[in-house]
Length: 247
Image (cartoon, rainbow, N blue to C red; front, side, top):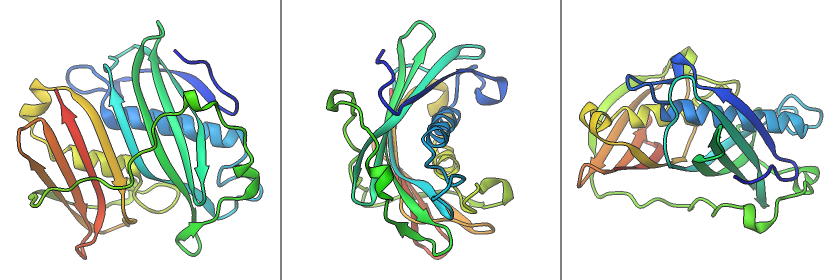
């Protein structure tokens, strides 16, 4: 278990009933939600959130996330989520996550890429210098940055369609990465969930998605263990792509 680096944040959480599946294991969207909760508290701690001075109308949005899962905790387990800024590159910010059980064993880790969205103009904004000047952890702490592109299959099959409603939106008035990830993962059959365990999940956000939009979930797999995911907007644009590996 690594120690909390400079400008990092950690907190303990207890797995609750609304966060588990029928096997009493923490679901992947619930795990992602805990990671996001920790990252928001870190942003508040560093005074770089949308609600802080100098950040008006600027909100962090995630572009890419790669999650590796060692094991999933179950109902009532206490877990620690650790997160910290891991680097900056022009308009991009990188953030790492580590999740541990109460004995210090690793549950999962994740690398992610973010950018700042100007909520008035709905476009990417430059990262303020005071954020670029934040102290970063030693290189040995930093996970590999998420790849900028995912390989996509030649053909997908339509899994299902879904209409975006009010509770799918976040404070940025769009659908966030957790909801999009949940929609993509739900395209996988119940048989896979009953017999396999997700080991890796990657999501890349390509465009925003809004209220009342009808999205189409696409899925492809050659072996029933490696899945490619795609989410299309009602105009045919790619909203998100992803991949998941099951064992």
